[in-house]
Length: 314
Image (cartoon, rainbow, N blue to C red):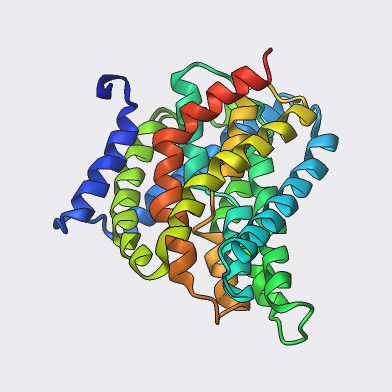
């Protein structure tokens, strides 16, 4: 069984094991920032290259449906957290914002997963990724605070729209679209040829970080464990339904399902810290990073591919 496992996932497992054993292993912060920057730019540029080739068909339908998907997932997560989990309004809204938003790292693993399986996907997916970041965070803040005059919307907007991940993804899309494949040939060895190696190093660090957050569930009970494990397949099914409405192929549907199933641990925590400081960040981060992220890359991706093949046969 392990022989068929993608090596980049094994790097995550190594980090998880090292973190659990409290081993002396950690990437220097500068290296981690460098590696994540390369990943975000590479994902954006790959989509931008395809956009330069005129692959924008369906965007007029995909954009509003993507925004609707983000809103729907956030409300659904909130009502489950409030109605079933009995979380207070503030924490339920904060966690819902994380699960309505997306994980760029999970998307990167999904791209590598499809590449290994030689399954193409629509180049508009990086743009849809960026679009899914925004509505969940806005809805989460509104659910937590309402239209409160003291909400720092300027700072929140800056965190969401000019945050590092969104800025690098959009910048990569623009660079790829303007330069095209030939223009990016000189940087191809760094950004494209080494993509999986860079992703492996990134996942090693993500495993270490995930191990650090496992302790949060000792304080928050079994409900959050169940939520973090059961929400991804449920949201993936909803994502597959939206992929069908958008007319996406197998690869695009798998990536949209993966995005719907993922939870943010970069943009959403930063925005919630600004707008809803009274929410407990350990609750959201432990669920998103220590449970949902490993589930999606170890179990979710092959599961979502099978669901797409069964539900959206080509």
